[in-house]
Amino acid sequence: MHRGIRGLPTLGVNIDHIATIRQARRTVEPDPVAAAVLAELAGADGITVHLREDRRHIQERDVRLLRQTVRTHLNLEMAATDEMLATALDIKPDYVTLVPEKREEVTTEGGLDIVSQTARIGGIVDKLQSAGIPVSLFIDAETAQIESSVKIQAKFIELHTGKYAEAGDETSRDRELASLIAGCEQAMKVGLRINAGHGLTYWNVYPVACLPGMEELNIGHTIVSRAALVGMERAVREMKQAICRQLSA
Ligand code: PXP
Image (cartoon, rainbow, N blue to C red):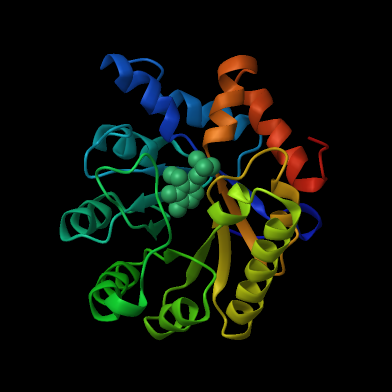
């Protein structure tokens, strides 16, 4: 949550897909708790998990154990529901990232619409932050969403980098990057702290790491994919390196 070496962002390692492999067989391995220990030993600055309503990967047991074992900080991604609010208030992660959630989606699609749900999401932000849990809102880099995030007094926003990551050519990639830069500048002006994530890889992360005011990048799928082949420690170490310099594809 604080800018790392040379002012570059810190790395929150999302370990959801370690749990995806375990849930494929409904067994006990691999254990996300062990993955978090290895990620931290390799230099992860934080551990992120998404406890989804359908419990397709991370289970409540994982979050409770991670709360006791994570030595860096634990970021709990969750839907803005009363059930998840109660769970977060009980477990007390270091921060919560509110995300939109649809059962049928493969992964989180699009950012939260704060504009149309200011009162409801504002109520959840207020309850969490009053309990000492800072809240980050996963949003698209749009002026109105940032304005509404300020209005409900969230401490952080997490800018959705999915469109940037999926851009098919240089022109659209540059357009998405420009929109992320504008979002960061607007957020900085109003005192919102900035994280980013979704779809980031070893090859596309560097320009996002260089965005103004960027504090933490939450990255999962690409790290777990590499970890399956070369091990968690090397995968995390190489992502830390990728945040510091452009890799050629
Ligand atoms: N940030 C948020 C809010 C997410 O929902 C996800 C996916 O769970 C990520 C970051 C990580 O995305 P990826 O797995 O594509 O790195």
